[in-house]
Length: 370
Ligand code: UD1
Image 1 (tube, rainbow, N blue to C red):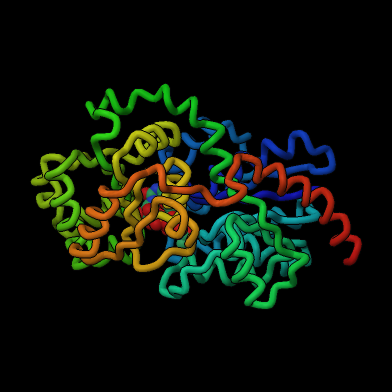
Image 2 (image 1 turned 180 degrees about the vertical axis):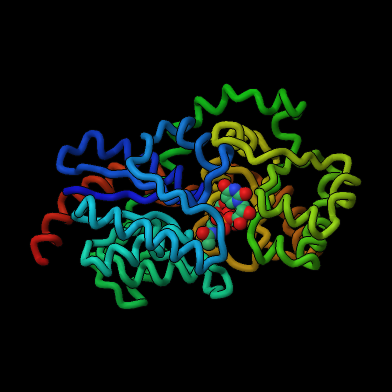
């Protein structure tokens, strides 16, 4: 079975890494790796390939940035040629970025089986580009692998046949558990002169948070209060850095003496930063899951989550973007005992192995039905 695996943007790389490793002991599968080039900066892409020991992609489409339509279209143009050349038995896509839906759509239009890893997550917020990518990708996938039971239930509710859905755990957590020991050796805390357990980490990149000056200013107001209690490290996404400059907010940020802006961190440094943090504030999806396994309180700066287990059993608080609500969640989180946090079932570091085994068994059956 020849499978083309697609990675495009930073949050895809930690999901693809354990799959590429799992294929090595699965002789039925011949993997091909395609990087779409959606993310291309050294610190957003190449660094992750090195640290996570992901093989060099067989193909890099090099599409780069653009509007959603242009980026999606460019990926589709480039990827169609790849599928025609390699004639795979299946295409596997992960997560919810533009590369996910673009390559998924190309595959099914060419009659190639589509596999979606991290299927079924729903925020129910259709203003999020990722929600559209998730709904569309799931609706055209042949095999759907879920990280948590809510994903399974959502898919069943949308009419996906049960025999196509598999609850396998979380490939991103596979990567975290595999690299945790190595991350302990990172010197990032010493470099930033931070003491374990006595600082917070902040990430912000979602367009709804960083493209609107009013929302961004509200978030900074809450950040200002928290940084009076403890230092905050803020690895800044390129979009956010550009917006802070464009909106003239650099002075506001620099005035917060305990807020430390740094470049986007590599995987190991970031894992060290989050695992030793007292608190994480983020609008990311994946970081809600990472803090759950690390048992570090997480304040999610969004109105909803597509990863409900992180809040129902894990350390996550869905706080929205209003300063008062963020600060209320902050106080509540600081009063909690991390020993009460739990980890969702199957987040045990073996999701990729389960996926490879299921693919080896199910794909021949599916392709035989062609
Ligand atoms: C994308 C994903 C988002 C994911 C995020 C992680 C979609 C719709 N969104 O958002 O789900 O959480 O990645 O980072 O796919 N840029 C650079 N260098 C890069 C990449 C981007 O400077 O290597 C800048 C460009 O100005 C670009 C902007 O960042 O226009 C946004 O990049 P893009 O890939 O469009 O989306 P993200 O906001 O990164």
